[in-house]
Amino acid sequence: MDRREFLTAVTAGTAGAAGALGTVSGLAACVRGPTQGARRLDKIGVQLYTVRSEMAKGVEATLDRVAAIGYQEVEFAGYFDRTPEQIRAALAATGLSAPAAHVPFERIESGWSATLDEATRAGHDTVIVAWIPEERRRTLDEVRACAALFNQAGEAAKGAGLRYAYHNHDFEFPRIEGQVPYDVLLAETDPALVAFELDLFWVTNGGGDPLAYFASHPGRFPLVHVKDRDAQGRMVDVGAGRTDFAGIFARAEQAGIRHYFVEHDEPAEPFASIEASYQYLRRLEF
Image (tube, rainbow, N blue to C red):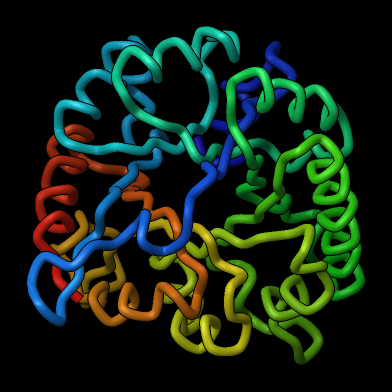
């Protein structure tokens, strides 16, 4: 089951999972200086898709274990039959915050107002679409239509006191009709209405350069998925691959990064994976 199918399944009957980008007070909320001239991440988050098998067994128990590892933020990928109020209570019980979550593309066109309402009730700030269906991105005109739809979603979210963002995979980077679809989405969406969550694995896998995007579109990436890639292009635990996280995080201010979410799409052992990734990141200096 891929991410699109998973999100559709876990949001059925709840009008879509709602997500959030937490309110922060600038870059100082995300990084701190452990030694003179160096910084470390102050808040580390995890995308709960990584532990979705455990979430299906028990949301509250999973959040307890995530908090015990040391994570301070989580990003939802479905509420697993919990109401927004139950999600809010579970977060409060663990001391975690949920500044982001993924929802299906289809919710924009059917159930968007309900999704925004759930986000408000759960205490979130932003909803994020994590996937464009293949049949909606085959031509540049279709990609431009998605950009227009994202602007509408962002305008509605803003009207509800929320924010909208889009998360990439690798399919946005191969050229269509001579242009890079991701570039089209960035160019044709209003920065005041549409933010982007850059997945550091998928952008590289697709041939894109995170640092180049930070430079050409400063401030548009308030969230990143912290995912590592080995020499063979395989997804691995953070710190076990070749990704230059220190170099990327050093450009956080330019990019606008406020939230860092660990993710592994298919870990052999979910809790061991997020533990290893957390331990690497908490020591990383940049």
